[in-house]
Image 1 (cartoon, rainbow, N blue to C red):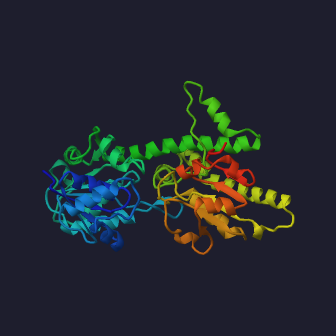
Image 2: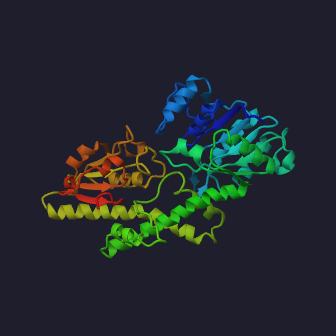
Image 3: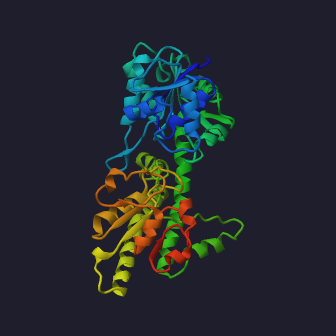
Length: 421
């Protein structure tokens, strides 16, 4: 099948770039999203997220008629589901968005269609999606009952791209493709070869699901080691930044840099999907998650100590007189993505508990997220440096790396990223 019409369900940080690269290859792409604002923005040839060069590609695709967005699913030859998979309860995966997307496309499915789950998911989610589709469309056959002879092909193909480099990595990175049958995998591979220049590697759906979770759990464990080292070094009065620099001179050692925690829609989430399925076996993975989840509280404790030291040195002042500036809200440098951001959570907690002024400095956003409205002020970096008594560096944005140390000499500084050490 030639897949002339492709539907991408979920037009967020993965779905919209994916839709754009298909459209750039002259495929007719129908983007589907429940957010009317996102749909209207895209149909104007604009974007509602920040990703380098994406606006140019989307504008061209919309102008040339290859990309349009809608809130309602329409017939297509291939459907890619790229919706969130958040938590519910105690880190239990919430598949309700996948279920809703499945039920949305089910009425327009036809024989020969391909449905790919791109959302990062716990093992077994692709089979569950196929079951939901089969329940909604008993007139069609699916791989779980008809194997290679099914009317509809089902596969899982997780994204593995870096925010800020999504367009390039979508094209250049290898893709893991896991179909429910060999024909499902082959169909998915032919679709992705529309734009993927990397290798398309075939496996089964469960292994593809587990592969994405494994990749991010590996990174999470390594970050947890660095974060735990930073806490140990602080207690022992050792510079963790110098320690890691020296240790990394060993030819087989490559310790990562610590930070205020771990954020984003992948590393902070995916390991829990493994833990939820195998709670008794995933001991190291759980421990790493707990270390990284606890790091924001350690940062908050450091902020409280800094405020205390400032007040000791300025006995005529009270906590209400202390201005705290939090530099960075995003989950990683030079992006606007606040999802699962420890920096945002730390800033929220400071703003809720500190009686003085709290300045939030995030050069990649134009307005504060709802959680900070009324309790913090969005501030330019220069103004924050001039007004603050305590500086909390949470994200190593490029704009912060150019701040000279001389501007910080009179301030209490908590540098969670080692930018000024």
